[in-house]
Length: 245
Image (cartoon, rainbow, N blue to C red):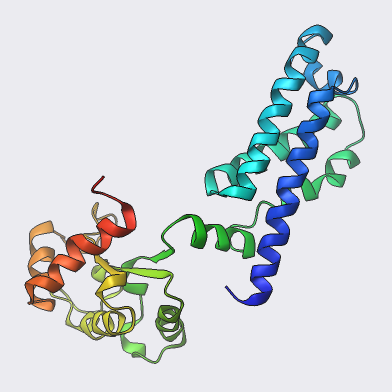
């Protein structure tokens, strides 16, 4: 991430955590107006007051988890919870403007392509993963802007590429010779420590028949060295996905 994205990431992460920790604190001390929101689900005052501290503790724990180890699952839950609680305002008789006013409670966490989402993908997981060899356009050559941008991502050390899906972008039939220069360019840029083989099964919407066996044979043709194939088929994916536990 760039310095600016790093700052944005930590600002959103801290703000999101504080939002839920503060919200949880209100749950622990209880708020009478929250009874209206529980009433939307048919719950009475007594039950509402019993549940408020429980939900408050959960909110605080989730907020703390954002500070310690943010994950996409927690981020998704925060978005859903933020939208739900914001919508309870008009559902309980308050103006719809109350939902809009709370857009920051859920909007800041819903940035799948923004700094917050990207940073979580980079930090909590093994980095970004690009499918289908980047899916270049063979006639456009190795210098096409999109593919060149993918190659530059290798410099981050956080991006991994699946060597797969030739049929999705090849202009020639098996063994897809027009894809080979792109495979070699990907491996040269990322090294086999950041590349892994994939069959692309199930072969959905394939324009011609695809079989697992010939694709494995093609991998052997492209990577004749046994050590290279071990990295491609096992070492790298095992490291990234923790298969052997």
